[in-house]
Length: 168
Image 1: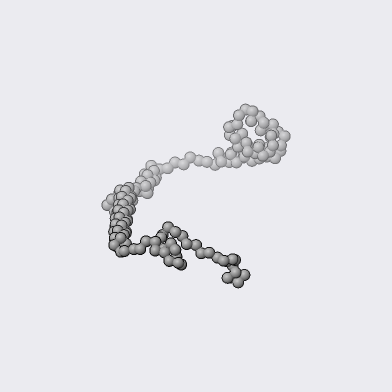
Image 2: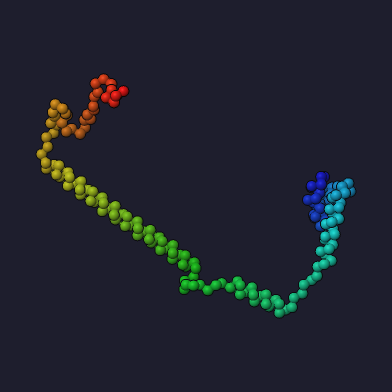
């Protein structure tokens, strides 16, 4: 056993809390190590000093009544500032918050529905005006042979190097 482990076990040895095998190891180390023996002697002196200088404290019966009265006044719940108890205030606040979010969501849905109706009516009006206007389909020209066909993509063609126009 080394000194560090012995120092950790000295108070348990002094109080008789070690097993028989551990107590024997501490005793054998104390017999061969003067510094650990000195430490044990210091602990024993401290324990003896505490035992001889302690006295029983006897309080008068009136002192206990004062202590009990002080404890009950300090632990008494503070009166509520509002007429509703705390847990009900919390529940009502949560309910009000849920109601605000619910009403906000309903308003949002109403606005979205109104916007969708407006979009659909505008789309229908545009389609009506397009159907009523006479259109010439696929009237091509020499510059644009495909006319107004929306399904044909016209790509620009380059003669030679396209970077030549940039001065490179």
